[in-house]
Image (cartoon, rainbow, N blue to C red):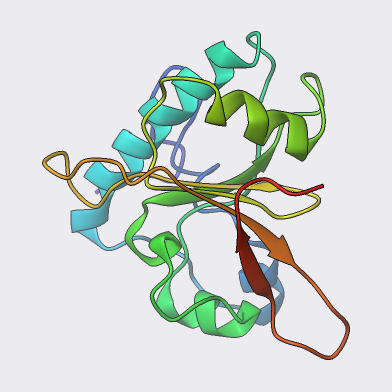
Length: 157
């Protein structure tokens, strides 16, 4: 049996990629299905590349893997890559703003499936399998009171 503190890479362990304050408050478990551990390991390896790109500054994960119950609780997209352990939301205060981080990733050769500038954090997703080519889909989330979040192509100010 694996523990949530199991290392996935040099700087990231399972607990960082499964932590959920919302789940803890609601008394929900946020434990990935056994088949998703490899996805989380691949995600952690991509996050290591990002950390290097960002000058070695620590990355703070705000959301990684989400169980279906946790995803519903927070209003996540029904097909979210978080459900498969393929996405992480993060910040890197030592490097700069989420917009600066997104621009650095966009300008880098790091492969990703989706990159979303979410205003106060970055959403980063890897492809579903090693055989898929990264789409490098780049979006900006647009929030408006009383409306569903919309997405525009590119990194918008």
